[in-house]
Length: 573
Image 1 (cartoon, rainbow, N blue to C red):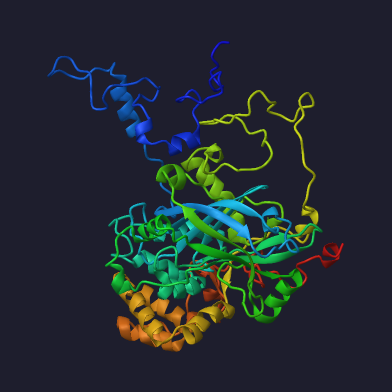
Image 2: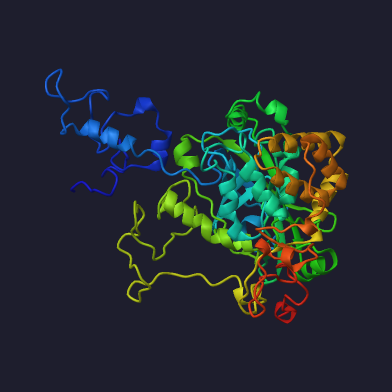
């Protein structure tokens, strides 16, 4: 029998690399390997070169050297535009309190256990930036369920700086280096505060960022929040809105601004890695808040809390957390690049029983994340072992070719064929019912700042922060503002803080030596409509009131599910 180019050795043993295998390569020791070129030819020494005589030029025929240098020149893939600095580990999730009454997702059934991979990160800094920067933390989890991967792309804060998706690239640019002096906002905070002072809906996240939670004590001691509202759909087609939380079993702790300089640049990575190596496996409880469509409408009508608004939170007294399971990280990666740098999380990766909502930032991320992965890693990024699903059936689709296609589905038809038909499963979710309430014409939309946007930030200042936390907050903000080159930016931001609390504004005025503007009612914002304004000239973003025959992009309910949003007749069917 002739040797096969695609099968193991005839005796069934995978001797050497007759058939390369990812896990065999991942777990092999150096002592078990032989040095070769990338084409598999053994080579006696990695430092040797070919040249003309002992003191002449190099030879182009030296494939070993050319192969080595050419690959070295291409070792880096583009770093993530956001969340570039990070680390992670592998582990497992297990359901402890079944939730199949609310979701048909297989992983929420009794006794289910699935492997997970988690990546933690900072948001704004580059790949080599400090782990103890004052910045939100990314908290992404890949649940490898028996119905495909469910990617949770979360943060360690329940809210974010924005709720209008088109603002995201602009905001992230302000978190990067200044285009002229190339300094970060640690040394020049002008762009940072300029954006925030023009987009006051960011104030809830600013209260968290500049508070004690702004520098968590490593990744193990922080919670995770999906932030966006999802839909949970059960086997009967009934659905509810849901917010997912990941609560640290280690508790939470923080590092002060003053103390952060005493920690190593890779402190969070070191802390996680060493804990796992010592058998101290960190864990998180997976919990959900849920509410019915009727409750969502009532919450807006009565309390002006918008469940589609990434700057709002659900009150836990009204909508308590329900635990469904827990996950633990018990395995460090063997190769950081293969298992962390190349891992790709996509909020569009959902499983039956979990559906997206009309949250506009979530809707935008459903496109943005996979688009970034296709650019950064390649169109076949999901074929990489760390990203590949682990399902009990043989996967197939009609995606073919592209750069680095490895699992290209053999000789199977690349279209829906009657000659060699693919198998299908019945639909398990009635999408017509779950998403039936979207009826309307196209509208232009930009949110406006309104009184309800200051309720949660005010609660943080008045009821959550103790005296020490308030002092640290003022020190953090005023210290950060000290590198802002434009005084009017500080005046604007203090006016925004004045809506949170006059006491907070007064403290900041004393700490900065800058008298803030009296009220945001007298201000125009370039990034949002001003619901506080008494004059039309200040009500519209950028002060641009449109002609009477043109829509103004101001909507009465700020994108919330107002009364009448849901078709309850359809939902009752």
